[in-house]
Image 1 (cartoon, helix red, strand yellow):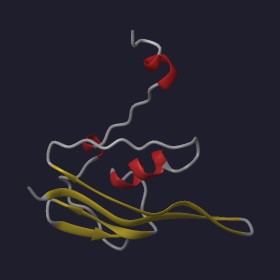
Image 2 (cartoon, one colour):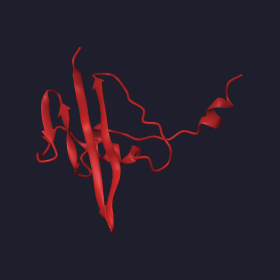
Image 3 (tube, rainbow, N blue to C red):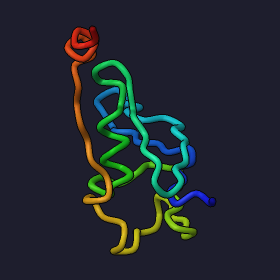
Length: 102
């Protein structure tokens, strides 16, 4: 089965006073149809920014996203078939889940 979503070297940099904030730097992953991906990390590490980039809510600085065989880079726009509705976020509390196991 081939990949339906491939993210390669995704970057998002923000200009700040005195330099550049590297919010996301060289993130790559791929998903096949029916697969799910969980992004796990510390607060402020770029998880939500990756979701916003893949769902087109914000523009990427560099990298590429291939969706169903069509590749798009920072200089291109996505087809209307790739929408924010395709990506969801969720939060869980590991301690609460861990505490429910007998």
